[in-house]
Amino acid sequence: PLASTLRLLLACAAWPALLAGAVAATAFGFAHGVAIVAFNLTYLALVLALLALERWMPHEESWQPSDKQLLLAIRWSATARCRGWWCSPP
Image 1 (spheres, rainbow, N blue to C red):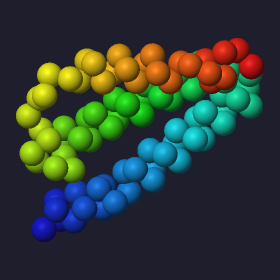
Image 2 (cartoon, rainbow, N blue to C red):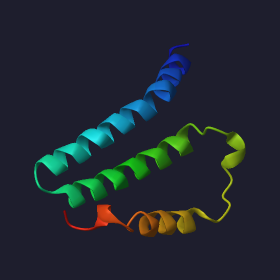
Image 3 (cartoon, rainbow, N blue to C red):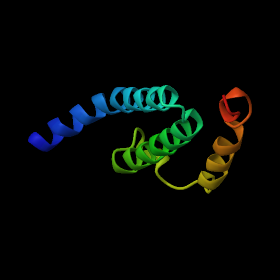
Image 4 (cartoon, one colour):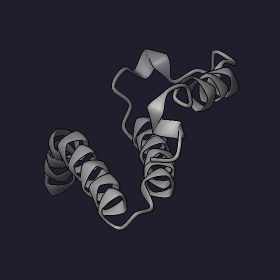
């Protein structure tokens, strides 16, 4: 059926499209002098898109039940990526 074909197409195209969009948005920010803002907004958008896609069409059904670590993972990601040159003004 058409729905399963579209779902398969989305499953194959989602990651390359998200990655290309994130790289393009970040490059746009660097080119226009707002590198840190562009990077942070792009990172947030990418995380939200991946969370939504993983809920809607999970890679593994057994990963769906909550392990009560989502907030911990978000906090770690937000703090760990802000160590080094990418969180400092250029």
